[in-house]
Image (cartoon, rainbow, N blue to C red; front, side, top):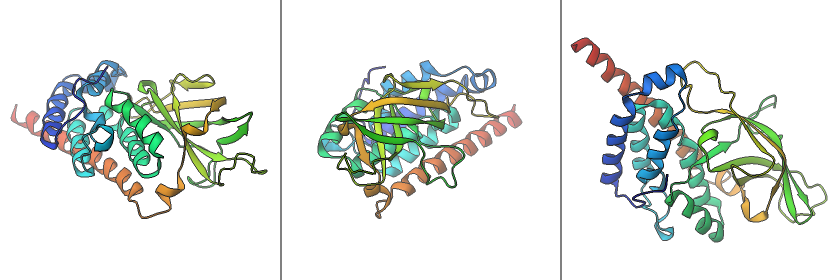
Length: 267
C-alpha cells in the first residue's frame, strides 16, 4: 500500500477522489450487506496519496486546506460511505499533530501518511459521566509510560498502521514532569499489549471496523505523547475541523442516495 504519488494539488485530489469513488461504488452495497471488509480498497486509498493531502508543506505534504479535505471525503462518500468514514480520524489526528505536536513529532509522524500509512482513533469510552471523562490511564513507569484501558467505536482500527489513543495522565506524585491532563499516544497498531477486537455489529456502515481495542500494560515513550490541551483549549478550530469531516460524509451519503434513486427511476 505504499503511496504512489504523495503530493497532490487540489484539482488532482478531487480527480483522484472521483476516480476512486466510482471504483469503490461498484461493490459498496454488497460489501456492506455481507460485511466484506474493504482491505483492498483501503490499500488503493493509501496508494492514491489522498491520505497525505493535509500534511504540512514543510514536511513534504500538499498542505491542502480543510475545504479540499472535506470535498475529498464528500466525494468518497458518494461511492462508499464506509470508506469515507474510515479516514475521518486519520485527517483529524494529522490536524492534531499540526496544532499540538513538537517539531520532532511533526517531522516523524508526517512521514507516515506520505508513505501511505493509515491512522485510526482509540478515543471513545463507555460508562463515564461525559465524553470528556477519560478512564484510560497513562502512568509513568521505569523511564517510560504505560497505557491501560478499553476503547470502543474505534473506527478503522482493523486497517490502521497507527492508533491514536486518548489517555488521562495518572501521576499524582508528578514523577513524569508532565502537566496534568489528557494526552494522545501515537502507537503502532502492532504494539505489544494492544488487542484489536473485530466486534463491530451495526445497522449500516458494517465495514468501518469500528470495534473495540484493549490496552493492557502498553509501553509508551514520551516522544509518542501529544498533550491535547493546546489543540482543544484554544481557538484552533480543532473540533470544527472534525465536525466538517462528519458533515462532508453526510453530504456525500445524501448525494449518493439521491443519484442512486434517480438512476433507478430512469431505468
